[in-house]
Length: 186
Image (cartoon, rainbow, N blue to C red; front, side, top):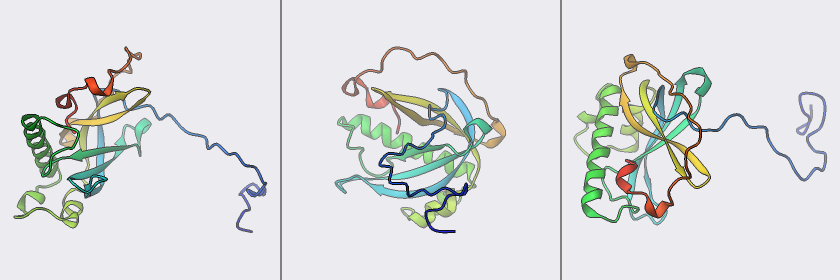
């Protein structure tokens, strides 16, 4: 079998200049749904200009089956200021919320991170937080024609899964400049 040979005996190398891969349902998990998920990646990330850092978590949904393997990304601004927040008081509240969220995630993952007496390293984050199933409450964000999920809450896995009914699209999302940074806690 040659490199370009496909499983059906055809060749991928046909000279075609266009190809569109079939995609599944990429609409967000319904607003307010609680799903079973685990963190499969936890690390520190910097902003593009390398002026600020945050903890970056990638969640992988386990249940319900209709959303299995979906990824939900979470930024926790626990040390530096989120460059998108200009008001110092709002940033202080946002940082406190991020620390509370991280502490709850850690508690659900076994509490190992809270025992680290210093700023946790990437290895500390990965060892303490990854592969520990818990319930995450997904909310929907919308900006123009784009939408996705953000995490509003974490709970022990015993709380159980519940998927909210999908609502018909409401009004168009407010322009980004009209969104209050306190409304989106990541």
